[in-house]
Amino acid sequence: GQNIDQPTEMTATEGAIVQINCTYQTSGFNGLFWYQQHAGEAPTFLSYNVLDGLEEKGRFSSFLSRSKGYSYLLLKELQMKDSASYLCAAEDSNYQLIWGAGTKLIIKP
Amino acid sequence: DAMVIQNPRYQVTQFGKPVTLSCSQTLNHNVMYWYQQKSSQAPKLLFHYYDKDFNNEADTPDNFQSRRPNTSFCFLDIRSPGLGDAAMYLCATSSGTEPYNEQFFGPGTRLTVL
Image 1 (cartoon, rainbow over the protein chains, first blue to last red):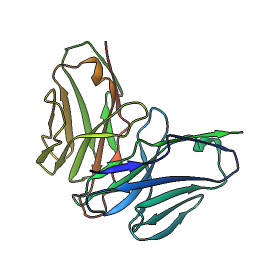
Image 2: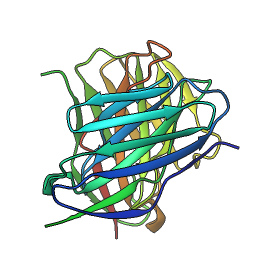
Image 3: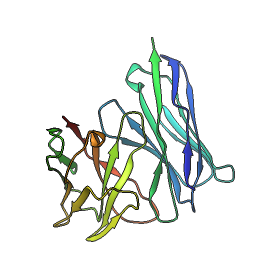
Image 4: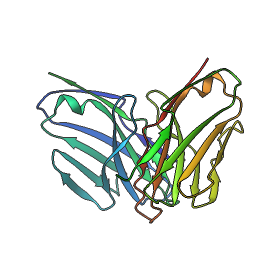
């Protein structure tokens, strides 16, 4: 079957760095997406990885290892507005996104 | 600005009373999706359209139906809402330019069933 695993909740301090991990099992693989979702709002796109390695975009970076079925999202210089859920989604061979349940990130002052 | 619009943002209905949620897009995307999302859960795909080609997920209950009369609009009909259908309903679009399938979401409609 197809499956995405990510931690349910994480807590970090303002100004610090946090890494949110995601492992996936899909029928075929065409890339890995990270979305941010604030409470009561729609998901918004953060990053896309299809090749192994690290993609950096400002304070956010995303890493992919296709051989391990593993990705992480790295958030630096955390701000209070980064408190949100972070959803990992893998694109399968039918070009459909298989979604994780999201990691709720709590930022403390 | 190109966007995905959902109306209404909040919908209250009574148990068993039909309700229709609407979605429109100005992105001119080929693919439109309807997701159901409950608190702290992954979005659950209900339907998607590739242009006018309708795709129903195997586990989508018969109580849910969808229409896409043209490229810009898509509707989700819930024929007889039950308490378990209370959720956020998300509409999303993508260009359909495979393999990169970034999906753009509307703000969602939060459905309450009394």
